Structure formats: C-alpha cells, structure tokens
View 1 (spheres, helix red, strand yellow):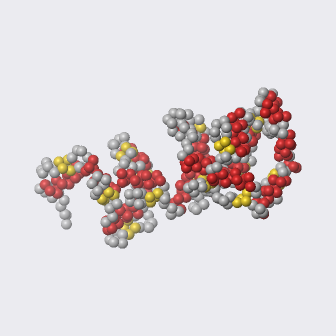
View 2 (cartoon, one colour):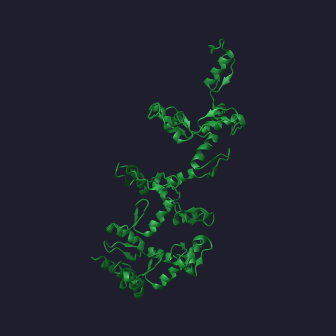
View 3 (cartoon, helix red, strand yellow):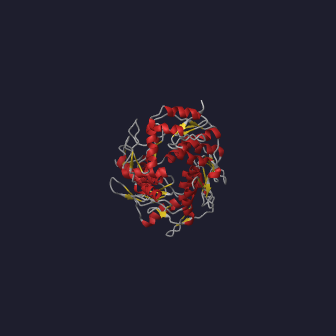
Length: 471
C-alpha cells in the first residue's frame, strides 16, 4: 500500500476531530493540516519560487511578512530585548516565551497528566503524544513521527543525506540546528545561563535539567534501586550493544564508542586554541584548558592548598584523613589514588618497560622515569634562599622550605601533633593504630615498628659502635 494511502486509512479510523486532517494532506512530506488555507501556506515551503530570501544572510521564508520581521534583526529597527540576557526579538510574543526560560514560568498545563509548559505549541505537541497523533509520515516506509525534525532525521536513513558539515572535525548533520549546537563544543561557548546561580551550559537541555536542582524536582526514578536519572539504569543492564568495528570492544553508550574509536583512527577533532594540542573528546579539551589559566577553584579546607580539578582535591584530602581506599592484592599495601596503586603493582611484575633515552636505565613506571630524566635535563632548578640547597623537583623543594619556615600543616586527629609532611604524619599515626608493639628485650621499651626497635638497640644497648670512620 502507498504510504500516503496508508496514512489516509489510519485517519479514517480516527476520532471525528481528526477527520479534517485526511482532506488536507501534503503529498510532498506527509504532513496533515486542519484547514485548506494552512495546507496552501505550507505547500509554498516546497516551491523555491515562492520563497522570500533575506539579502543579508540568505535565510528564506514562505511569507513576506515573516521576512520583514526578520530583517529588523539586521537593521536594529523596533527590536525588543530580553531583560535577562539582552537577546533580540522582533515580536513581543517571542520575547515573552523566551523570558519564561529565565523565570521558569510554565502557564500551559496538560489536563491529562499535569505537566506544564512555557509554550502553547509545546503543550499542543505534548497532547498529540497522549492521543497517539503523528502528523509527519515518511513517504519511503510509511513510518510516522510527532515532529517534522524527527521525520527529517529519519529520512536521512533512506537518503544518507547530511548536508550540514562541521568545518573543524568533518562531522555531518541532518539539521542545521544540530550543527549549531555541535559548534558550541569547538568554540567552548556556554550560551545558556541559569538565572538563579549563573552557571552556564552549552546546551539548552542541560540548562533545563540543571534548573530542576533549584526546584528540588527529580522526576525520573530508577525502578531497580529508586535512584534518579535515566542514564543511571545502564548500571543495572549488562547490555553493551555498541561494538568497536576495529577490536570488538563493546560499550553501553553510543557516544562512548565514538570517542573510543578515535584511538584506532587517530582522530583528535578538538584543538586547544592556546597551544594547538588536540584531543579526542570535548571533555578532555575542557579539562586541558585549565592548564592555561590560573584559575584554581578547588581549595582544601585543611591546609588551603588550591587545585584546578575536583578529583585532584579529593586525592589530596586523603593525605589529611589518611584514607587509603586502594589496596594491593599482592602485599596489602594501600594507596590514596588508583594511579598510585597501578604504579605499585608494576613493581610486583618487575617489568621495567620505561627506559631512559639518555643512559638506558629501566624503570617500572613512567613517573619514576620522568623524575630520573630531570637529572639529565638543564631545566630550571629550585634553589633554597636560606641554605643554598638545589632541587630538581618543585614538590621536594617546597617540602624542604618547611624546615626553615617551621610550617606544620599536617595535623594528627588523635593527639593534635602537627608535622611538616604527610609521610611524617602517616608514620606517626601508626603509633595510634598499631596494636602489635615491638618490645626491647633489654629495657622493655616498646616501638611501633621493627626498624625503630633496631635503631634503639643499636644506639642504646649495642656494646660496639657498628659504624667506623675510615678516615
């Protein structure tokens, strides 16, 4: 059966208020209309000669009045401005609808489910979903859709046409609106701002979701564990439908697969405008950009040290709390960060995969190699102004300076003693935590470790001095 006839048959079984749609069906795109005049106006959009084009930007309209209103944006004639973001409008009704995105006002209520909307047109589309009305039908397969945009995206399956290409990463889109949204990623733009807290977002949907946090609304619940957020449900699912065509690795999300496949193709479409470094994802670029700024928004409440990234702060705070959640299965040693554990596990494997290009020395991990390579480098050295001692690493230089300043920023939560380094605090905490003590057989003095006991025995009870000067 022809798709258009199929739609006409569907409408013949519909309620009486939809019967008028059958007589006003566009045979170009499958859209139905309530009146003949509306259909006549719509048909102009399929005829190029009927379009009115803007001579400034090339945008086209089916009505001359629409073109006249649009041209005011170029001439700044009789424009209306949003009181919140200064966006320009030519019609008052468009301005009113837009300002509702800032105020959160939603005056149009669905009587069927109670959901409210800021636009009457959105409510009308929502009601159509309740009633199962799909006005847009594909002329290739007869499949119907709620919106013309959804139909246009679907048609690309048959035609393969994606006319709008990104000039930065060659990604293509069916709709220009989708391209415009995509370009925000490359530009780093965040055009949608929250009127309550000022936080900005790249996408309008992200802003809409964020605004729910101010209203304490969490409408989407997981049926398995009562948690919120739809994407959370993937945790409970074992399905990984998106497979890499190169190595077969599977993912739960399509976007995760797209980013992963760039490892095989070598594509890094996101470029830093400061240093030119390229990245496989926009999130990696966003994280990298903080390197070029002095912005450090994350401050430790214990020692006021600042960090560029929240994960870095969380790892640092464990030096104060002594929390070590990552444990080695081989020896039981624990670490504050998963990366530290991975580095430690390489030592058990005894694989020296990282070699110095200067002297050939091998190392278990890349960080140890980097530290070693500084001994060959002529880069900036750190000299102590108090004693003249020179350091290659900035972190060890800062620890050394505390000897002269007397700064003791690491405090014991048990007894209040303070220390100049986290390692000294860690050793001290063993005195509070260790139940097994090591007792001296000579004087019955106790120690928290065998090393301290041996040091005591050599210094106090040894009849001989073991270390003799050869000079």
